[in-house]
Image (tube, rainbow, N blue to C red; front, side, top):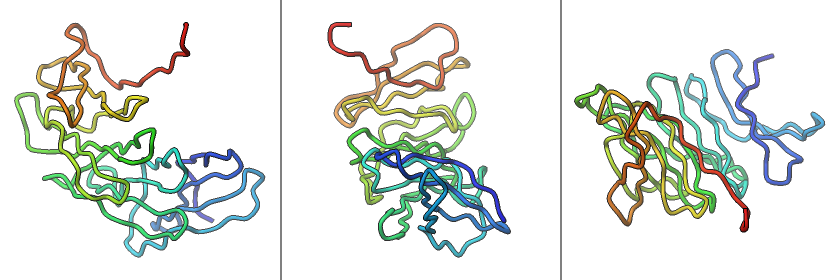
Length: 198
């Protein structure tokens, strides 16, 4: 029967994309929210589990880590054709936490690299929606740390691990990283959307 996990709504809120794993094989599926019209999207042949599934805001692509939590690459699937493209791996082949830009044009992920003063670090790697390399913004991110795009898709917030306590930092292809916190432990950033006049 298998198990289903990592559900993501499509933009119309009428269908879900999710991961179904049977006998060690994971695939992406789409299904209506009433449980009808289930359709397999991917046809991966390698054993392994898909995790960290995220659908692009425009509903045309999905990114995920595969084949294992501790040793994964990031892949992009075209939801219309089922075609799967690998993104450039980090030096250690341990890539985590894909996240789409709000305009669906870029994908960022944390690509693990060699040990620094505070242990393993992450490269903030940004690729285009087809998985082609774009920019490595920094190599000071915390190992496997979460990344998040700004609402205008121009900056990425992340936690740097230059010291014992992680600090929030902003990075973009157009400027050097800027640390915005300095006290305490600051992790797992997310942006908030405020209406004008609030």
